[in-house]
Image (cartoon, rainbow, N blue to C red):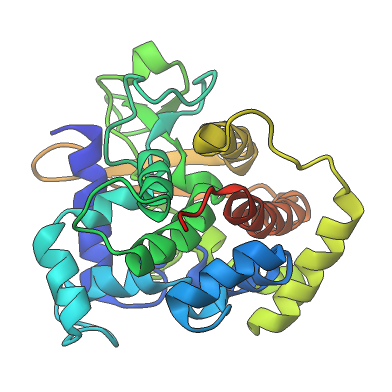
Length: 324
């Protein structure tokens, strides 16, 4: 089974289990990044957003792609929504669009790299831009493309949606993290941290910790407006340091490389213990221990990644050559 299919199976299982921890960044994190982006649109970009949505509230559509994924399983607020049903019929594997699985030692994201694929999160950000510019896949409406862009730029900035743990399993059932891409190619992976459990609870896993727990700690609140206020403060202090360079059609590739570097920090100091294998191969569960200083390092990092998601989303919407 390929790394992609292993990760997809885990994502689908999580989606079936619940609508909460399965969401990348959680709906609050996505909404907060959407609020930051909305506040930083140029008048021209705002006008185009309003023309598509009827308003400029990017936070309101920030989790649409996650809700569509739940609707595939007849769950959630879009379970009977005609647009969501059509979208899932046209694109039944859209759950694979939310991530790319890169070994931690990968130098940078490459569109045609050995671990990328035509439907990974970077490709789908770029596809959404093409649709908004009047091209791309004709089955995707401009509203859907805008929903995709808002959500996937957020996903792209979540480190565990880019960096992935690959492991060599010892005879005693222990796990050794392998970061070298060539060595990792044939090894099982942790499905973006979804298989890394630091406690006995169903959602005591590393990916969910980044999706929700760290986001909650950014502002000491789950309210998107309070989280967004903290993110705005970080943005205002960054100045032009976060400005993307080169052709905006390929900015997502550089953002993925940034998230990969953040993923190395997310895995730093984590101790990996016993492995529970899948019946058909791969890893079902790895017992992990987080270092004592994990929050001290990773809460600020999560805040920066979310702030950059909002900043870069606005930056991209401001740069797009919208058709007349």
